[in-house]
Length: 299
View 1 (tube, rainbow, N blue to C red):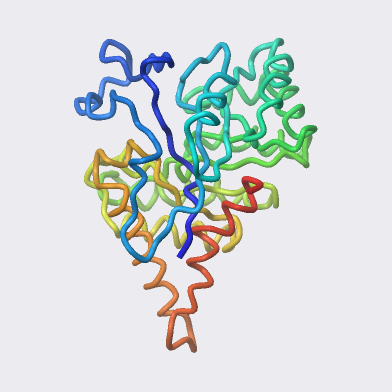
View 2: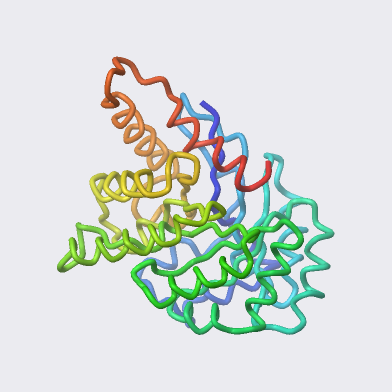
């Protein structure tokens, strides 16, 4: 079965900056040194039964001042079909000029400006909102990385979507859902996350990518993954959910091939247990592993 991985990173340390990967800079993970190296397409190996048909490269801090340089490097070195979500400073009045440069690169489909703890302040900024509207005007999506447990940020993103209804927003890393394997008072926390996902789910231009499990708990479980996946499917439906790797960070916990085998097994389990269905028809698997990513990222 073909898959498209909608969230991964490749590194070229000799030409790129990657300040976040340097040991003296945050994040100060004890295992960060394992990914402080060149990472290229050849490492994206899958086990038999799965074929990587394409991927979406998410900005990795190659050059924050000139983010088009990362897209140029990818175009020179990648042979698989790929799309790019570029970095961009949406707080800058000069972002339209940066975007004009980015739009000359054919792989561009979207932009990410990491929100995280600053989500409410950033999404409330008039300059930030103006630049989001510019993305929508050019048919580009916004990769939103923040915690869906942040109710204030969720509310202000809903206001942005009301004001810019054509903006496509793709939530990164499942909106950092509370994982039962390492969350105190998990049920209460998970209910808040689900409630806020439901608020965003009212907007048809919102989708979600499930990845980054290792960022919350290096020892995350398959039960964590299944709980989050089923909640996303219930709230957003089967055409707005994508499964992704976050490679090479996923290797903090398991190999690239093993992660995709786990996803496949979880989806097979869901399909087998559908009512009045004796054999899995692979429809859901095809959507979450390939078709949804192809659609949302304009392959």
